[in-house]
Image (spheres, rainbow, N blue to C red):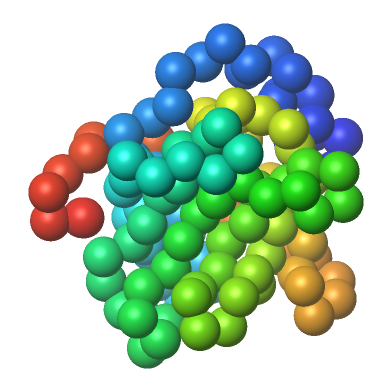
Length: 119
């Protein structure tokens, strides 16, 4: 939506947070910043397997001109938000994310302390 795009511009200079927590309908998952980069932006990974598929990722892609994606290695992208922001700091808070399967879902992103345990 327009909110995430506007926030992405405003937060362009924000440093990438060490970790972000995403509140899904089925639970909360913490994503920790990794050393990996994709399109010049940090890749975030969850250590847990709440989805039962080996952990989730939060990363930037070139989908629809630039978007941050949430997904799993086995299932691919599940949700995405169109934004060319340098980091997820741009969309901290509650924002609508598009479902790859159609429609949208409100997800809440919170900045969190980076921990070795991923939680």
